[in-house]
Length: 365
View 1: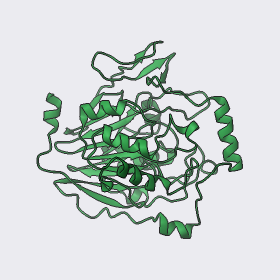
View 2: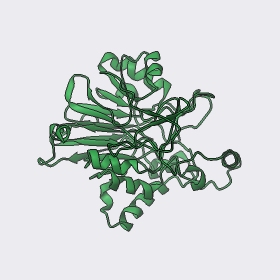
View 3: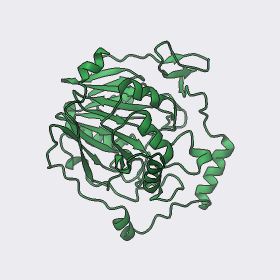
View 4: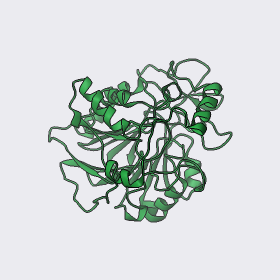
């Protein structure tokens, strides 16, 4: 599968083209957000945020003891033995943005992290307060891994090595522009690098399409590599099943474009946490109300809340994302059960009606 780089290299303020879609955009060789309202927090706000983290000022997370967490935010052993129905999907939350989705005889893993810390070293950096519900060795067969961007809580060195060691050439990695060299340096054999709106078929599965789609975020792993890698969301589309993975994102118009082109989705995994203080996090991470808007934008029939309850990254109450999603659904007159959360390691089966459109019909439109 060939890599196609269709990103726009320009000094202008827009990356919109005649197809009505917002495309990726570069300035001076680095990716930038094409959304007019997007801006990175100022250095002053960054210093204030660091001070708040150091002093705990404004921190409302209130993460309790492990004994209390076992009751309020339990970890359960994933049940990988139960069958995936032929007329449905099975989704298992593995913590943070790591989700295993099984449908149509394929297993897709998103932004996997099984390490204890989201950092370049395992002796410093954000540490899990809820551990992984299983190990890489416990996973069933995984066919595809999609990576939304290269931040340490979404692209984990040890997990990538362990997955590649376990599954080898059978595993196909779908990654953003600019990430292929890093993945291949880790020994990953089947790496497909994609730009926004680029469609690729899964290796040996012509009936499954993987599409990289927009998001509002940024990338960085070292001191000088800012935004050399693209970021985004993913759509995985089968004969009757459609899955959307939001990755890590602020709110942007791109989600309406995704819904119009590829929706409705049977299942979406949408971030709901790491959003306070709002003046610093707004452009980087959606809050629960914006997550519900994404749920509507992409035309998701059901959505799973992710990117919460695992690492202490920001200052909102540790259970607040879950309760605020329910409140936001109620406020919009939507069915609360259509935007759900799971225990760490918990699963849910999504039933798909026989009338769902096929991938062939989508490709032809």
